Image (cartoon, rainbow, N blue to C red; front, side, top):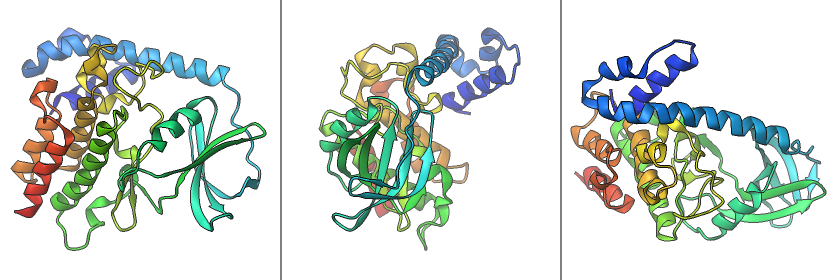
Length: 302
């Protein structure tokens, strides 16, 4: 097992009510014992903080407003997804005759995400269309992706004629190019995971959910934000350090996503790419996500 999976195994034990000491658990994995003794206490604290902060935020924030059938030029068709802090609807923009996705937020994230997406214009990043307010509804309008997220699709059959390894490589290659573009504009996503990688029916990637995104020194980005299973170790250990918000945290998360798509029968070269991207020490990862993408591209050309 790799380090992220071992951490998740321990957290699942804790969540199920088991009383497992960190020392005894870490001793079961001698190759990671030092790292586990360092990371697990912080992970426990972080999960508790995240749970507490979410409870407080949801309690303090206003309820998501009831959506009318029409918001400006947007005719609401259906709800696509719903979370504690936002809801997403499929809408139709009657002004330009095109479908779109309208995201309604509880708090200020709508403005934040809109400001970030305005800077990014890439084929593998969800396109920004508009933002606005109507009555109590604060919303962001984005490209509507006629497909679903990586965690909800059988991606192995998405590309006819390609092997599972090739399909995984194509998806991660596109994701890496999109993230590399964001990095070139000073934006770190900070919550890369399968649920935030959208796939069209033809297999084109759109990176989504930039609520936690920002620069390396963004003051308004919560240090506890993110999904622990895909979170780089440096974010768990040193949340306020520059390394904890560098582009390499996205590389780690994408590497973990890639690794989970592969198995023991996968190409050793692809496994090596994923493992390097999710190396424990940031300096041991690729210099950039473009470098990781180039390695995947070279493998696909073989």
